[in-house]
Amino acid sequence: MKQVFLSTMIVVLISMGFMACTKSSSYNSSNPTTATVNIKDMQFSPTSVTIAAGGTVTWTNNDSMTHTVTSTSGAFNSGNLAAGKTYSFTFSTKGTYPYTCTIHPSMTGTVIVN
Image 1 (tube, rainbow, N blue to C red):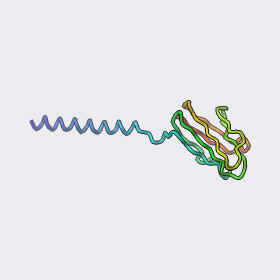
Image 2: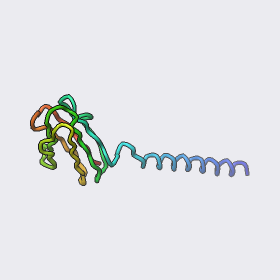
Image 3: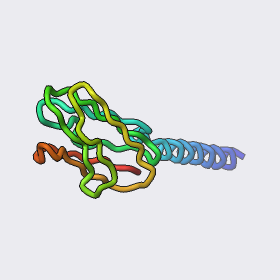
Image 4: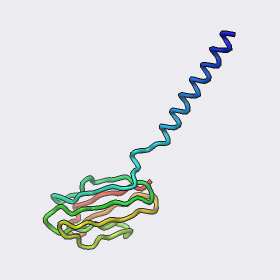
């Protein structure tokens, strides 16, 4: 009887551990639906953001000069973004989207959509 009880308890504990692992692996806090990128001191910060498909990235120009947020593949383009202005884009398709400031090509960033 003790052996059956111990065997049952082991199975229950293993199952609980498996369920806990399964639940935690399905939760992914690194895949938010929104992200913010600041433009300051001639750079995008952070330079890379990751969002879920259907998520939106908002860029805010906190620099003293005009910049653009322009996809290198043509997927999005803010046009000229004056100081203090914002630009948002919603990403419906999974993929990696490199972008640049066409006025200052050394400024680059990436949006990763999962």
